[in-house]
Image 1 (spheres, helix red, strand yellow):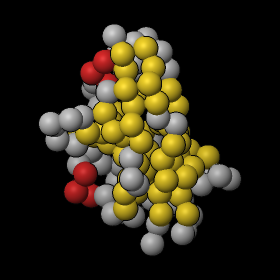
Image 2: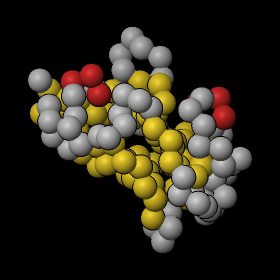
Image 3: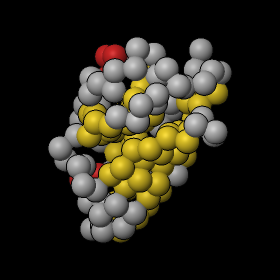
Image 4: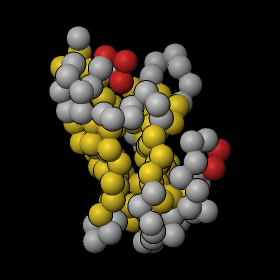
Length: 124
């Protein structure tokens, strides 16, 4: 079992930055892929970014390319999402997820474990 706990959400003005963290416990993540997804009110959950822990290969949604960066810290067993140039349309609950098959896929179906989410609100 893998437990995931997100933190770092909050309220920020458009153009600002936030860094989300996802701390994992239960096992090391070196054979996993980690993903970030988000869900805005009344919308479906959508892919944001993913990283293959072992090799650092990343995958981003087109809507966040050039603005968001996913990274991981082996020592802390933690994955991060640095969000810059935030827009009001980035407002959502952000979820961290782990894929035991190390795919870094954009589909939520491939992810085995999920955190509880952290709220990000961007004001215009």
